[in-house]
Length: 563
Image 1: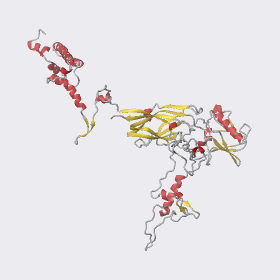
Image 2: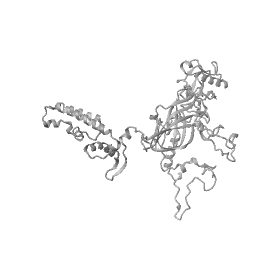
Image 3: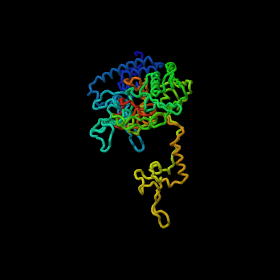
Image 4: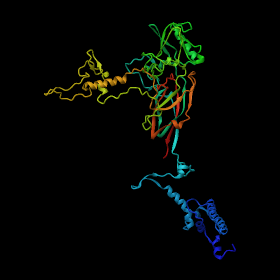
């Protein structure tokens, strides 16, 4: 530096500059905190920009001395006591150092403006720290890390479903064949294990979504059951028809099922052996898993049976002592009966004598491949379908015209007397209760003073009556026999696969929902949950009969805590 002229010597002498001057030379601002790393970064940037300058040999030493001086000054500044550090200082350096904190404070105070013209403030904007990082514990804040939601687990167990009220007694004048139900407080459970309603001991508020976590279901249902007509078929030989019924339950193999059918045939003197009238041959069953039937004379097997026993539509009321209701018994259908499980796909099969007949499909002793868990939370603020299924597009469903009033125009609600006149139910033969259009008394001009009752079918024209009758007939009759359709419940929450056949009723399905994010039910806004109706359905959409065994599942509830 000794070769420099006096002006240049003063220019490149660091001691001639105070800290404000050096901060200005390095172009340090309050956009980020000023520290050693920031100073080094600026020095390196300036050296790179001035690398081709003719006086870099003079500038670079100056920058190095400036770097050392600033670092020493800031280290000394940080070593001050709290009182000294916060003393008011109106120098340029103090303004630069404090600006970085003032800028952050102003950013935190910004609001989300909904309408600039009207100065409507929506809500205070969240800081970057609240959105992107967890903060340490902050004094005076009960939610320092700003958690927005909390998760809770709700346990459902059908074992604890509601029982009959302890003060309940049998109604006076009503007899019951079951003496246990005729006494006070019979301790009868009001619901079935696969269809029950419960209330929580405390409501769940501000719920935004729910999902199933774990499910435990016993293998206690019957594949071959009277409920679905899968334990029965009919044999027709000549003019004689015989019902063949096997024991309800589960058969571990096709051979054991064939043995049960042959035993049932033998019980009706149809032999059930190789030289008998009918024989279910099981010699090749272990190889091809198909049944072969041999008969000694022409025989027709009716797999689908149309009678009240096989095609029941409702469950009997209180048929067992331990429950007020039982699961539905829909009976056999064309696409699900004992013949269907044996591999036959037609309603009936006719076999000629001496011509063995092999079923086109394999024997099914497995039963349902999956179960459906439905959860009605008595809220409408959600999607109307959690699981989409199939429908039969060929089903007739004509919408009746608006002039037809089914409450008063449906003739089925009336009760006819011996003369064919319809009366209101309970008032047959009494004047004034006829199902006819009764106008007021005639007036002088020959007309009724009162208006006609337009809700009676007698006010419709012949063409209107004919149109309504044809639509009703098309909706209620079909040339197709009843079949099971795809389950279409609006509250299906989870599809549970059945991985093993129900051979051992002491085993359970232990299912862990690994796709909780995809299967959760998301609500359109925070809701309150308090009451639930839970059902467990089979793959036909009916409540499965667990033979009064209990099952359980857990639900993960996501609630808003602070927002």
